[in-house]
Amino acid sequence: MRPAGKGPLESLYFDYPRFAARRVPELDGATARHPVLIVGAGPIGMTAALVLARYGVRSVLIDRKDTFNDGSRAICIARPSMHILERIGTVTPFLAKALGWRFGRSYYRGEQIFQLEMPQPSGEKYLPMYNLQQQYIEKFLHDAVAANDLIDMRWQSELAGIERHEDGVSARISSPQGNYYLDAFYLLAADGARSPIRSMMGLRLKGDNYEGRYVIADIRMDHDFPTERRAFFEPSGNPGGTVLIHKQPDDIWRVDYQLREGESEQEATKEENLRARVGAILADIGHTGPWELEWWSVYSANTLCLDDYRHGRVFFIGDAAHIVPIFGVRGLNNGLADAENIGWKLALVLHGDADDRLLDSYSPERRGATLDVFANATKSTRFMTPPTRGWRLAREAALSLSLKHEFPRGLANPRQMQPYTYSESPLTPYAGRDAEFAGGPACGSAAPNAKLIGGGHLLDQAGDGVTAILFCASEPTAEQVALLEQLSHIDRRFAALIVAARASSPCAKAIADADGEIARLFAAAPGTLYLLRPDLHIAGRWNIAVPGEILKTAEVCLGGETP
Amino acid sequence: MSAMPFEDFEAAYESLALAIDSAGAERETLFLTRLALVLAHELGDIAAFRKAIKTALEGLDQDVRS
Image (tube, rainbow over all chains, first blue to last red):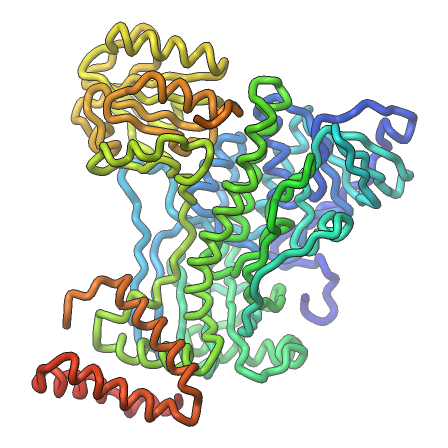
């Protein structure tokens, strides 16, 4: 919603472009089957198209709207998502515009009771979180989409129906230029929380709805406070409800406030009532200057998902597959991980480099991530919007004790998004090898990053396919060289990184680790080998390389049968 | 204070919230008082229990609503 007298896309700071419907070849009789049709050009659909394009796979991307989503919506990009944006070649405008952060504060009745500090290991390239309005996220992704010859972007094009076949899908598309049929081998449903594709296929999300409702309001003001997450429990500006405040670029601030029990949503979202409440909250945080109202919406927490994210040749990604509570910034970030996950797998299958079986791992991996998100988000949601008297009393007791005592303060931790660990995945067949290590990143987890002596970062050196990181005393042995050679026969995109005190290796990228920092990070000894998947999660690790298991794991990452 | 791991403390918080709901609004005060007596007996240390009472009483006056 926007203030009275303003159009739905009349923003204080963002000019919405309008995209015309193009005349497409299908309207002139073209019947060629496309590799992938992506429905929904939000952040998730566009990212999926860019991941496919990175592997040289063409896609048609349709959206029924003629511009980006209205309002700032998802405003927080987590570190793993920055790596995804980097790999699809779009991270630069994000870094230039977004506000990075790693701290947060929680207050109870005006007093600070908890300080959030997200870890920033010295080797990491990106901060844990970046705030950026969703319109900018979509604009930057669209700039990359528009510049990419492999992506056929079609605005004002609505999916009117689909037929599913053994070997593909046939879509009926309507646009102002005319209606047509389009055939594709695969369909990615990125059509959002109210996914029409889900309804067309008779599928339903399952899970829980939570009682508490929040108003999300964006305002513009000149307010001097660093980019941090601020949470106010029982503030005098919104008695009986929690308040969250986030800074965004262009002097825009996100004020989220919980509605009191029994408060009418309709009344609360009336402009005059909203202005009064926001004014009281701003007075509470000491802002006495002017402010302008930009946009608002109302939100209630849900943990809902599909039973299966794959139905034959249709894959659900992002909000079309799962709806998660906003607390902890998991909606956008998990959607981006969905897009990357299905993107690399589908690309390898379409190239004939991986067996179709690889696609079976999409739903267990990403639905597993969703269920993990639910477990964490349910805890934060119960704290942010206590659902019953028992939870309300327990929270009141914990918060009031937090004023003087350390022990309950951790309950106010917002549990910000962490990348999911695919330890149970079929692509992580030898997770038991973790027992050989005293530390370091576990099988299935996202690989940590490290600064390199000559500049740049370790993960910059990873390839588009499977990557091995081999730790050596000086040079790889003849057996190790032979193993790397065999890996390159399994995966034509294979990249090998040799980490040694002094780097000199003829057969692979050599990485100097003079002070042993990288070896410590990976808890590695000479002979240790880590195998990374294309999305830089750890497919396996061996304290001393076990060639049979390593070769098998590489095969499994390309759709080979699990041992 | 004890060296209770945070995960355990959080589990205690959750169990308590659920138990208050299962006691019901009319009996919650009786339930919480019984719980305190059971914990005092489990603790077996009158000085520690009195300290806990003092901790829980402190700042209670700021807490007008519940």
